[in-house]
Image (tube, rainbow, N blue to C red):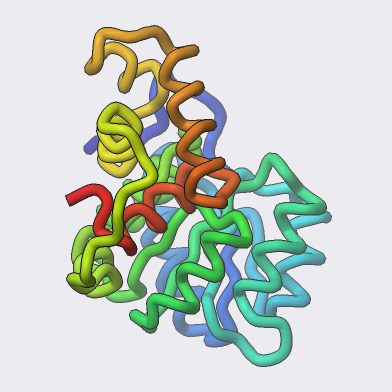
Length: 215
């Protein structure tokens, strides 16, 4: 993928939040080397991330899952309540599914491992900026260990739509793939949310995967 935003649009404005300065500097250097992305601020704690997000109103906040004081889950919720237009992507060294699921349930657009490559980091920022889900395949495989499948509350078409969401497709792209209207795709998603007890695309995919409903 080219290191630029589609159509020469305005740069994607990114806020970095991690309690280790060397990590922030490393992420900043990788992102600043890409066209179409600019780092507008850095924060060393969850509390500071919330303050900076409100002040700077970034498009994307890359947020460490575990920091001293306010953790990434709580910071995610506060940022999204105060800056609804911001997309939060969790960046973590940890692979504990309960913590990442908590962050997604708080509204995070997805997650990324700190060991990800420069291109994976750039792709994640661009994906989140498009309003799509950021799921790292290597981490997803470890998060969603095989479990006894539960009876699916989802219809075949609802599962099909969620599989395509998990691949990063937009509603319009899913409609084209399935030969249905975008409104029909939205209807299937809303029904899925209700059945799964979630309120957004990312949480729906992760919960369905967690229970073996998309295999």
